Length: 112
Image: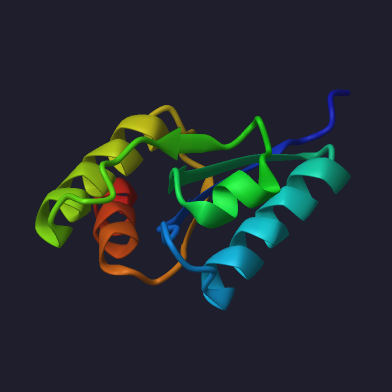
């Protein structure tokens, strides 16, 4: 019998110029799960900020944004990027958001 695989989709917004603890801890947790649990299929989707470059896990999906864009444009592009990259998830996938507006909106849409 094939072992059951749990799929986790994690969504986060990564700052460009600073290291904020919430993003770094969240990305490190996803990296730890990805490296140490074979029965878990971890997919972190984030923008290409500073913390993602520090962790550098090749399994993570990075959404390319222009750091100089307005917040509203970055928010819309992040939501669309989250939805595009998470749409292949199965119905039993666990979706985890890091509590910023783009992640919460995308999680709400993905739930339905």
